[in-house]
Amino acid sequence: MTLRKTFYALTAAGLFGVFVAGCGGGSYGTNPPPPPNPHEVLLTDSAAGIQAFSIDSSGMLTALASTPDSDLSRFITGNMLTAASGKFLLVTDSTGTNIKVFSVNQNTGGLTPVSGSPFAIGGAGSGSLAMDSSGKYLYAPYQTGVAAFSFNSSTGTLSPLANSPFSDGSSPFAGAVDPSGKFFYTTGSTVQTGLSVYALNSSTGALTAVTGSPFATPLSTGPYNLVVAPAGGTVYATVPSNNAVLE
Image (cartoon, rainbow, N blue to C red; front, side, top):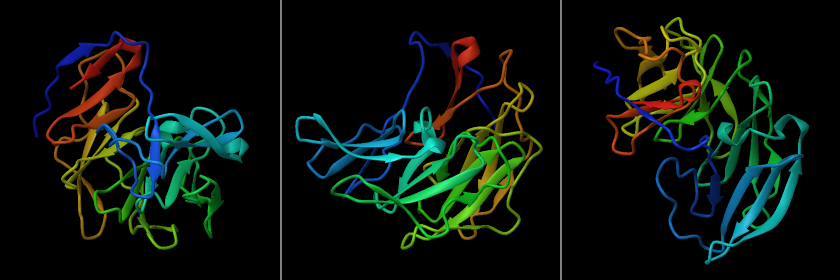
């Protein structure tokens, strides 16, 4: 596998993400969301936990339910995603040690913990959550590897996969699944372990590091977050300390 080491300077102060769930919803990732409809709900972090908003046909927001939770307050928007067409919200706690799973009330945006939540990752430091294209498997990179779970789309419960966590020796932070569902990517904590690539077994959810992983990066510090282009084939990783994006 060949990695292109092109990078571009960022002119913006930073990157941030929003999260949309609804009756036809789910996470929109890097694709622009479709025109909003009255049934869509925006979920975002707040000073107390998670705040829900309705989105009308003009894009205006109206505050709905607020879910207080000190473990989820502030700066966790990047660590949350929806599953089962917006039926569930999955989010890491403030230390990246546990995954909390909530059922989402489609009318009020209210959140109710599912049975068994929170689910232990196995260690601290998870920086993001990612789900495969089938919605069957959830991945949580953390300090010593990638924790992998099967996801029950009916109940919202998580079950650790056999041999989880998966590791190539790096200390991953963020993760992303290739749109084809064949590969899983993570960012590492050093220049030498800047990017890891795993083959994803769609039948079992297991990850296997590809030859050469982890890969070094050409900048002086390691990358932070990453995203895979919707068409696949290209991976972008931010390097905030260098004000750059790796491609």
